[in-house]
View 1 (spheres, helix red, strand yellow):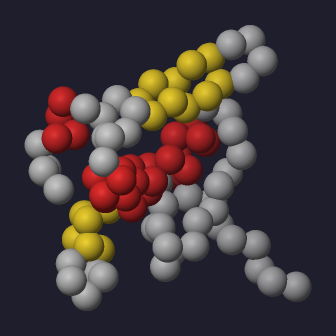
View 2 (spheres, helix red, strand yellow):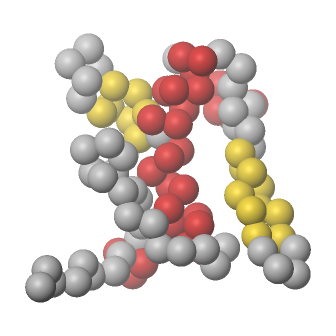
Length: 92
């Protein structure tokens, strides 16, 4: 993992047409680097040290008009500004 690699390699764009929008992300070439870029960097015990770009994808989908995506926090804690977080409905 090279922290500065993201400065020269990772690019994400939104492609819009009249009927839809799509998020397109460029990823590194090595499987280990792809995993670290998407999931984040973890220590030897598996504790998350640095979140990956997956954390920002649900909010990006919101911004381009897609559905509100929930994540399982144990797998990937989604990042959203406080103003974009929806309250969970009370279980019936």
